[in-house]
Length: 453
Ligand SMILES: C[S@@+](CC[C@H](N)C(=O)[O-])C[C@H]1O[C@@H](n2cnc3c(N)ncnc32)[C@H](O)[C@@H]1O
Image 1 (cartoon, helix red, strand yellow):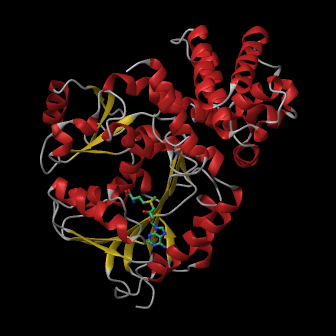
Image 2 (cartoon, protein in one colour; image 1 turned 180 degrees about the vertical axis):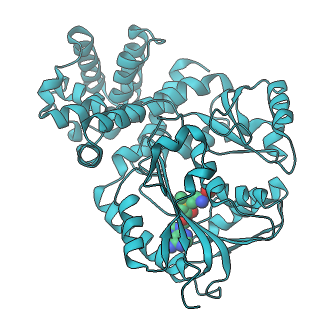
Image 3 (tube, protein in one colour; image 1 turned 30 degrees about the horizontal axis):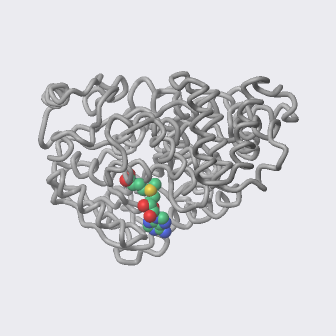
């Protein structure tokens, strides 16, 4: 397939995302599964689609200074074509400028009329002649940072107010870096060293995780999902930050565990593995269609100690009070810690979504707390970095619940390297990229055992 077909496919994909018909993380699987592109074309396609989404704000800043028409007045396909062309001219060294220009003009001729192709040609040539506009033209220092790192103003504003300028900038820069892939080893089927040998024999380049050396491998080259080790349940693709939630909950063999927000089952299966396929993990998710995903993972990994069911964790009355040894609440959240995996989130997420999520998280925590045994442990986790969803949520919960205690020993169950990110001994806030992981939060709470006795 030629590069021009890759660009057509990228244009179609970005147009679908632009019209809110799909999400970036689903697209790639679609294109590969439906064999729309050959294997060799996938890296360029991925780079153009993800890169254009990642840099959209900066690209629009460039386009605004060269287009006579306001960008929202352009036909969507033309805007998307201009964006992906500017992306290649500015950020992709591997494609020569004249090739980008020629193909953009050809596509514009095919999809539009002569006037449109002339406009596309004019805008791209002006950019090549004049280069980037001055960043200070973007506005205040905050807006300049938002444009430079290609984020919406509200996200930058929120991070600056919650963490200060320096961290906000680090987070925003990290969000534009490619995400890593790590895998969790299924200890019921394979040792770490056996997994290393097998994956290397399949051609993967990897290293033993510096954070969780017994449990995880970082994959630097090759597709973990395509390996026999994955298909036959010897490994699971999971970020190391998520593995830490399972390590911190630390379920024992024979225990009864609730995973209150469980789909697609990444953490449920980790808990079940740690329990040596004994005891019971009750895995609940609000969405019926996602229960299938948990079951598929359990089957793939050979786990029979998981019971999955649909349910609303805000009103879980299916279980007797105090009937679980440990509970995981991996709550629905804004996902602001995983932007590098889903760059379109920058343009689809809205600030008002966060308020709604904070109240859902609060309701879930309150409801499942009743189900925890006295002396039991609850881990609350999210893949966001927003303080309202994280530390403020947990602190308020502790204030409102006399029988809840901050687990001061959480650090003992964490990798040495991340302990510097522990707050007040019972909360961990990982920032995106800082330790090579996603942005992730967890807090460990214990239920008093001396109440009501
Ligand atoms: C962060 S994801 C969980 C990821 C999962 N723990 C894993 O590691 O694979 C949050 C999940 O919560 C579910 N959810 C949202 N609202 C819920 C509710 N009220 N009760 C139960 N599950 C809910 C969503 O469907 C979503 O699958």
